[in-house]
Length: 363
Image (tube, rainbow, N blue to C red; front, side, top):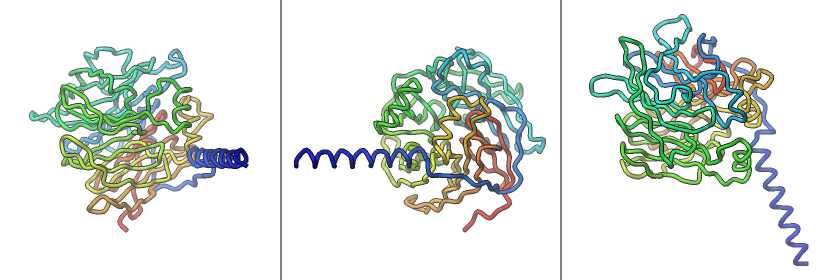
């Protein structure tokens, strides 16, 4: 009888695990196309527009392109990492590459997440998560010379706590949060890490001299902080949750966890509004991201707007765009401008998009 009970318990646990995997991989989901208005492909980035940062005072956006993520074979990476600049005041729908100079490792510059800080003299400082073809990691800091249209290397930071960085959120001229989205350093071990549920990611803070863990044993993807530097937003992507935390210059305190039922990537924060590009069908996203230049494998896209309550404990979520992957594949970031009448959408490994917003977003 005892062994019979153990057998049934074991079978129950197996069925529970299999059910969780079905939900996690979104095997039961389909995506139906709709857009908030006319959407256009922006010329320029062709190997991704994984993250972007809008500089409101200059009416421009910087875009990361060419990310290398858990590569199976470094020899298959034939493209270069780039930073593009997109002028939001023009309607030519062209993003121009910006030259990056004085890098420590020019061949190993494949940018991923991006953030910025405005220095006291008005200089735009970019903070970048970067990887190499062999998937080693660093934080690269660049200053933008507007008159020369050049990004100049300031410093490169490597640290044992920055072991698989995904995104970054600047808090000063030399300080930032960084998210590690896992611990495995190759695709096979990463799959095992995800399927086991033993997340090895973390949220780390760098104060200009040293790093410390703020959250451990999680899956931290996109990360952004409010303009007043008091509220941190983290995409716990494997849980399909947006985590909201208060920041008091030393520790984080959880405020809420908002379920999205979608694997949301990077964030754009506008007051109590959070805009994000998501992967609504994770199995398709995983297949696509293994080789994003293979156009036989597309991944659905989704843009969500989370409108938070004043205390950030609840949020109303609006879906602004859904795409089956044939037009916009694997959306990773969404950011509005022009008083929420225009929308930029980035993708992990494909192109960059500019949409009109002709639908109501106030409910």
